[in-house]
Image 1: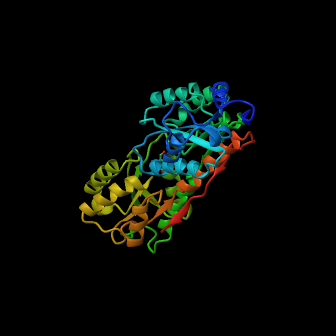
Image 2: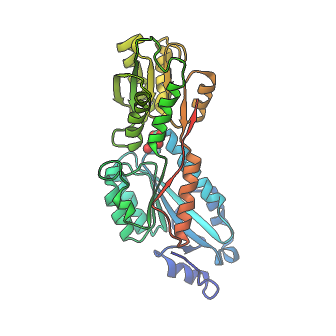
Image 3: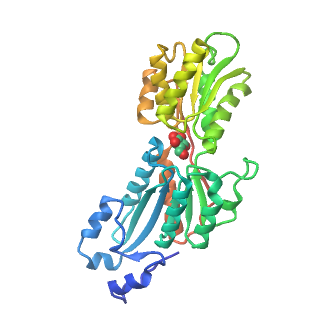
Length: 354
Ligand code: BGC
């Protein structure tokens, strides 16, 4: 994958012609709209000197859905971090596309990236069950593939995924969602009453699930409760419903649960902060008070939720480090672009916020 330019010997025009479709191309890039302002500025700059020695790498970034609080922070950071790493001789032309939460759309986008001759692809799968198709096509095109945020699971759910392990040019960069679930449970365990507000010997909870197909949702749902049970705390699930990571759904589910179960609801666990923001609004509308007669947990540590935790309107959240994860994804992409070996898995830790 190393692209040492033949630049010194060839004219800019010749280099551009020679390298079309086979990896790094000589700047300025011609065809696509650059994703960053820096890239735009670069394109407007006078063509010659700087560009003669510059290598431009084309990076395709496929996000499952732009309309997602957390993935918006994540994708913006990918773009700005790539831009910050540009030098006079190395440019990154990043094209980021919205899968609109539709796997068929995303598959088309990945195929387009392949025909566009992307040098590397970063993909946040819409459906992890479609990992194989995407991996096979990208590997066959000899393009490094960096999967992010949605981990394809192995056969028994606890094993690393063979499609990743078998391919040295494919990796997953993410955070172990078991850890975030465990932290949610531990935050409750750290409370004086361990979540048992009414003292009936068990914690009665509502679980608002992100997306049942997503391992982050599965593990957070399981491990938050497991942490309580492992510590000998009895639990009772009043409601478990899918909120698709979305604030409005979180609000709707929490409102219905609170009107159906009233004071019996002691803890609302949300698989992410987006849904917790909705649940917080429902809690307020129901006249309940977090920290007094109910507890509320999320994951991500969105800025507004960190603020709520410090004010006490949310019990706790878990930092899902989008900066650490996006930087790792970009660093690994660059390793691959430079022809260096990459690992199959890279993990970034969660951090408890209470
Ligand atoms: C985040 C969610 C986000 C989801 C997208 C999760 O890790 O916690 O907020 O919606 O990723 O896949």
